[in-house]
Image 1 (cartoon, rainbow, N blue to C red):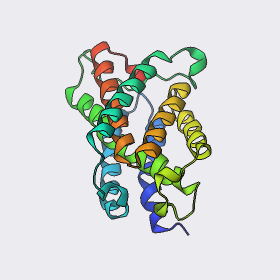
Image 2 (image 1 turned 60 degrees about the vertical axis):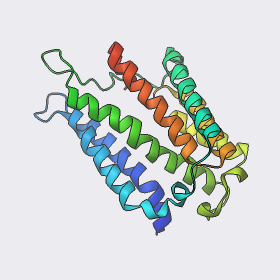
Image 3 (image 1 turned 180 degrees about the horizontal axis):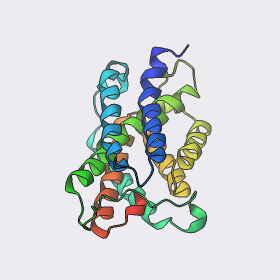
Length: 219
């Protein structure tokens, strides 16, 4: 049986994956626009994160100092730059058209775009950092993962989780590097807020760039 702790840390991520599978099953010619599933997806994940909030004890400690915040922002910017440049064919796992919020008349649907960038910058970083860094990396150190100080995490869990984190993304090489940077921030600072902030900065900048240059394949 899955423990409540594991369910709290892995449940929102599993929910996110289930909606990804659901979106892939909707035929492009269907009456329902599958793009709106993303809004339901991030809403469902947000509700789960809210419902399980008492389990995320790391988020209730005092936030790190300004130096850590500054490094987190810089790392987030660095990952964004890496992400849009490591896009050669061999650096990709397949190729998808991405998420385009463009309507039939050629205009961008503002609500759809806002939901997409809001989910990517606010919900996804929280969900993924809770799962990959706070749960999986610490679980690899000790099954009683919530008792593990992040500074106890060695390079083995950091590298292994970063590799799987990269494989989760189409731009796998950029994903591996991002995982290493976010993971190192977590271990070095001892605060989950550091990788969450860095991840949010990356996704926020990427969303703004995608909208500015219509590079929907990055979504």
